[in-house]
Image 1 (cartoon, rainbow, N blue to C red):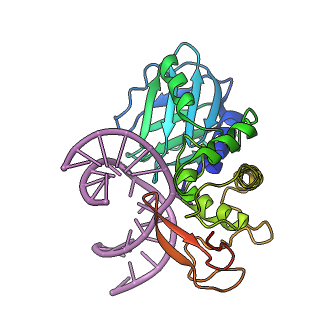
Image 2 (image 1 turned 45 degrees about the vertical axis):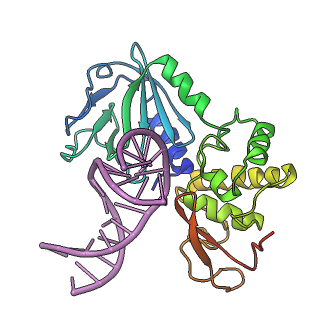
Image 3 (image 1 turned 120 degrees about the vertical axis):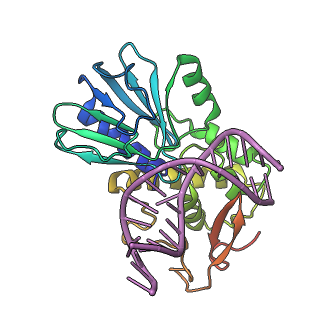
Length: 249
DNA sequence: TAATTATGAGAAT
DNA sequence: TTCTCCTAATTAC
């Protein structure tokens, strides 16, 4: 269930467990060639939006994108055998991570790493994100704000759950067009705050007082006011919004 | 045991 | 706009 907050969580956890160590890399499934990485030292694990980059000595960066179904299984004991479908196992002395069902798992030469970064907008979970640029890009988006939020070239890391919940928190109708810079800035601040909560909690947190609850995402009724949640397609995904708390306009 | 569903994104039409 | 790919977890039967 990987939106940006979980990808950052994976990066932080794996960096802490594996960085600075020599990796044992294998592909039980056989669909990845581990040879450029096996036996080399992992320098860092970096998240950018929904993308993971593993920086390994004397090897191209390893690029992982989980897509909709990808996940990692973590093992404290690297001796635990991986299940057969594991695309890649990254193991060091005291931990192993099994990558399952990624959409992308590939070596990425430096020019393609650059191209990847260039293709992504500011990531609310990165310290080097430029808030002004984030505001510019969202305010410049021509279509509905709900479609723009899913466009990784506008902001990187937002997925369908965060779209629904952040727009609710901002009181914005996802169909709204032409969001002014001030509103875009408020939305960015909400994203920075809540994605960090979500990264630390390991799940979407849109109400810190009730971390397991959602305001509108996949709900029949708004958790704040009880109105019937509006459900429709926006940006090729299902959108959810409260017609009362996110009035059109 | 089987059906159902999924938080993505790129390519194909 | 529709299709396609990838697997686990949950729910239903």
